[in-house]
Length: 85
Image 1 (cartoon, one colour):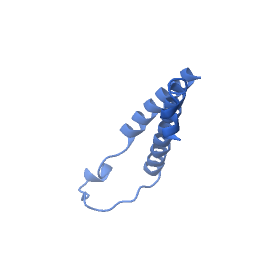
Image 2 (cartoon, helix red, strand yellow; image 1 turned 30 degrees about the vertical axis):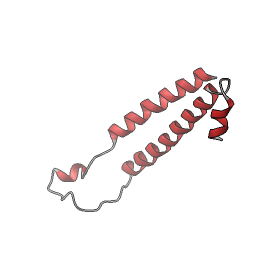
Image 3 (tube, one colour; image 1 turned 135 degrees about the vertical axis):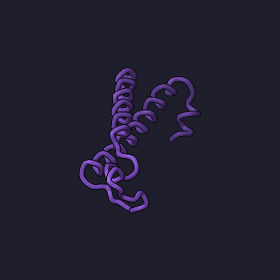
Image 4 (tube, one colour; image 1 turned 90 degrees about the vertical axis):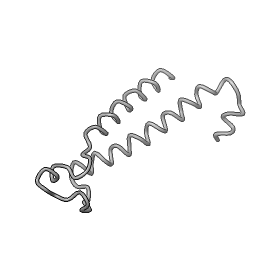
């Protein structure tokens, strides 16, 4: 069971890194053609989907990490798991 959690964490971490690198920073391609960086833009299309998927993967990664921590400390001390719950 622990092995599956670790593999899932690695897969989610790699996907999270890839999504973070794919996201456009700043003004995007508009900066090439003279668009001001101070203009407020809303995320649309693929950019919005990548942003929402990144948030979902962060939540999944945090949940997997907490579950792995609870499973690892299950046999050692009960005070640590009681503190978390």
